[in-house]
Structure formats: C-alpha cells, structure tokens
Image 1: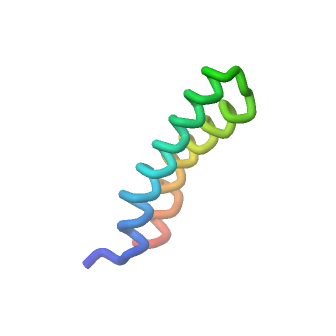
Image 2: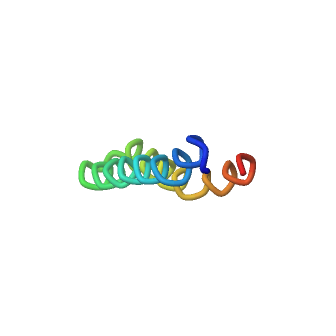
Image 3: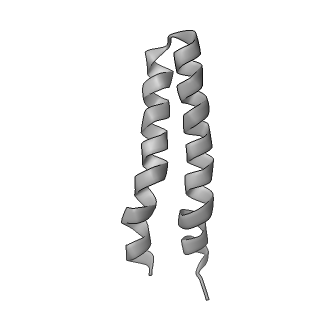
Length: 59
C-alpha cells in the first residue's frame, strides 16, 4: 500500500508546480519580466527533479 507521501511527491507535487512554473514562465516572457521568468524556470525544474530525490527516501 502506498503511503500518502508517495502519492503527493509522485503525482500532485510535479503537476502543481510544473503548471505554475509554466504559467510564470509565459507571464515573464510576455511581460518582459525576468523575475517571473526565472521563478518559472526554477519551479519547473524543481517539479521535474525533486521527486527523484525525495521518492527514494520514502520507499
């Protein structure tokens, strides 16, 4: 049986932060705002790589 931490970090965390990251990235590019652009890139990369770091610790 999967623990709740496994479900959060494998399914919910990447989708939520990836979506917000893409929205910030698009907003930063359209408004020429580098802060939003860098924040969007950071959130998207965080959503992509953090599950690979946390999930081995949970399982």
